[in-house]
Image 1 (cartoon, rainbow, N blue to C red):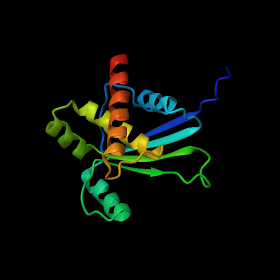
Image 2 (cartoon, rainbow, N blue to C red):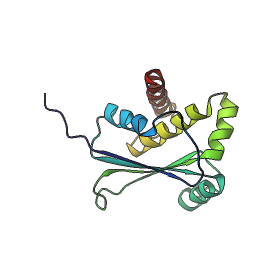
Image 3 (cartoon, rainbow, N blue to C red):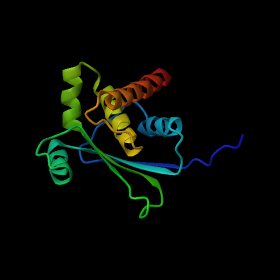
Image 4 (cartoon, one colour):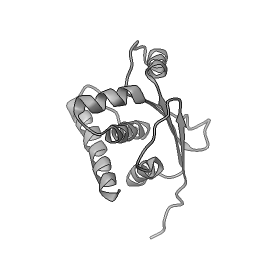
Length: 148
């Protein structure tokens, strides 16, 4: 069996600095490999509520904060498939308290959610698509945490 030439480029940017106990690159690459992707680039950008609200207003016409926003690259203008994922550190902190989970686990959930969106998964209002994304997110998080 011939192995695919896998190329992944994961860039991490911080508008709002945070520290992690886990390797974010390893987590993203695990998802991409499980989804049978290669030649892929992901930019993770950790921001505050002001920035995420601006993005949500400008691109989704929603004047409110949100936890994660993903933008998929245009295949015609980019060498790699992939996209940008903006994560609000402030909303992640609130969600972690609200759902009684570790902050880093909430960050993993948002990363997985953003990556799945870039891969074409969506959660429209129908229950089935929401459940598919949730199950995949939880599967990848649980597998990754067992390896750590």
